[in-house]
Image (cartoon, rainbow over all chains, first blue to last red; front, side, top):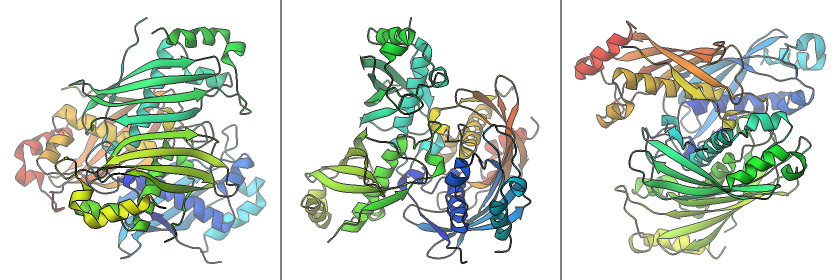
Length: 139
Length: 139
Length: 139
Length: 139
């Protein structure tokens, strides 16, 4: 299966007085792309939450390489970096759609929690999902 | 009891490329001031939610009078306009703290919902809260 | 020319602890749809700003009719309500894409400012744009 | 001089459907605290921008340790980690105000740009500011 790269069109409300996109929005775009990516491989956030499994963020990092401006569209490439059944790490590359110039790169780390806030082992409790998460690493 | 006027210091992430505070933030400041106001009169959002009562927004209006810039602090005055046990309407005046120039005026309308999403009559089910909500109108 | 209705896919970061989309985001979606609409009729925000013309918001209103949840996509219909060369008013209808249930309706009022913050008459100074703005009212 | 630790009261619009503060807001709180910290040591963002110097973010990292909920107030401690006249790195510790439990730790990296987007050496061009930035590292 071919993963379709996520696109985000920048919005006026995402700009700041420096005239560029405020840096906090890239963290939100990571989430947009992550949700889309997981949906494409068959792991919908809302389905997992309906099963009582949340996917909180344990850590975020972002290196800003160039500035994004209002009116531009960016592409966000997601890939699986680590997954062991309990935690996962995803990587992101944001590029300007037109020029393909890299805007930023980053990573997010996650675990899985049940509704009581306790860690969930996807490996033990959700075999189908586990197989899909594992397949992420091969892409 | 004297209500203390709420203050908000503007943040860089609230600006847009016009160099001013983006208009959508005033709606969020209404909420900040509303939460604070209700807390001051003894109706905490989190307490009400712990009792299973949510306070969704039914309508919002905002008239922008002058521009707010990064680094300025605004004051937000809240007052009760209508309340009938089932719905309420609040009014807001946002002013520059230093000059007292009016930045915007607005209103929000609300109802009360239980956890199943059904309307709640505060008048019938929460007599203590009802008395406090009624007292808002006299201020 | 047929205007294409704008679509927005709801994001996790737009939800609040009531489990629904926070009401302030609809104001941002109005802006997304307005920008897209103006682009479709040939009036790009960034082009106008490059000519030194900003389009600040003078007023906003929004009536919330039903709740939007994470994972849903909404459509946002925009139409021109008033325009006199100096000010304009636009109307919005947000619907669930799948069921077409109305999520909210609203309006925004705008004027036009030059880079010194003075009012601009589009009618007097930008004849081509004026013709396009006028054509909005016929749609 | 004693630096006063910055406080932020969490807002409803900062929550997400997991019932906690959305992780992207911590990046914004870093900015709030950074602005306040720089103001306390005598380096106001708006003053620097009035001199044509912007302070873009080159990188951000954040490790989330525990969850913050609506109604809680957090404290945000800032400290200077690196500064060489051209770039700087700041560190952050966010704690629950009441329990002092650590909510997250993080860092931000910055450079200085003039209005044409070219790097500025604070060391060479702004001696007074340079002395203040250097003094950060001793705190």
